[in-house]
Length: 123
Image (cartoon, rainbow, N blue to C red):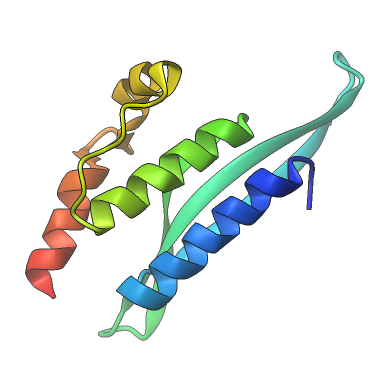
């Protein structure tokens, strides 16, 4: 795993809990590239949701969130877990509270809270 071992474990545990307890199909990826300007590897963290289409038997992947900050990914997946459980989002991190306003939109169309609520209604 690339850097931030404890944060990586937290993300994997929440991902696994969402997948097992709620039937989510969350995928967590790390993309790396080398920055010649910064002379170091750069990591991009991506959380995807696999969506199966029973009509075609194929699946597609929808990007829920991507960031270059591991702590932002931890905060995002924590929020996702809270929403799945019908809990209010925590407000213990002032920096994330501000970032959440910018990152809550998925593909610029619908908030993750609305998407989760839609899934619950359709289940």
